[in-house]
Length: 235
Image 1 (cartoon, one colour):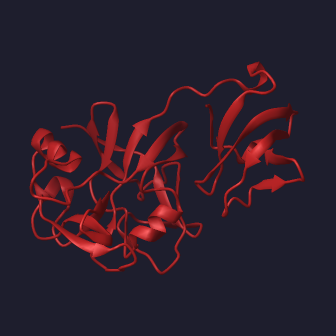
Image 2 (cartoon, rainbow, N blue to C red; image 1 turned 90 degrees about the vertical axis):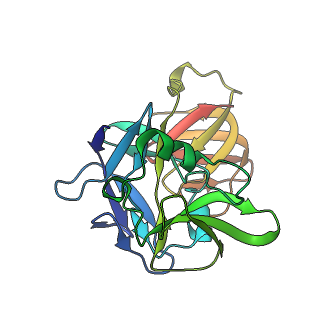
């Protein structure tokens, strides 16, 4: 089994040791490795799986608002990757992504640090509206349901990193190309490329979601500072 140290975690802009306890509405961000504060990852093919919760006392809803449940691009150590929650069981009738990971890499608590810490999965509980699955805490495959707004000192965020496809070169995109632009808040702006200079990207017919303060909105266009772009893809 290969363990890789890469990147560090920040809460509200403050560098913290992995497994930090969060307060309500803490903003999670990832950055380049800081010695002594690196996140440890288990290498699983082309994916990286955190060897523990990197932040606890977070609600599922908070992670979702920040884009981390189903995937948000982040940059660490010169790499841009999709950061998301694992897929976890909400029924004893099916095998989850987490079960498959444990089959490949074993269940040792010294590797996964599941004892006394559960992590949020992506899935809804079919017969329990508003509830999500959390895995771990009493056994590596143990799962239980919590409401998406529940906050517990023993439930947190265990990220998975996946490689993203190469970004298209902006200067080579033709005007009118439809693009999806991710900024520092984790949400994305979608629109048609209407203009480009050394500083800004102009998108026509743009959808600017709430929480997207890094994108300015004029009557017809969205204006994005190129320095705020974390990842861009053609859609």
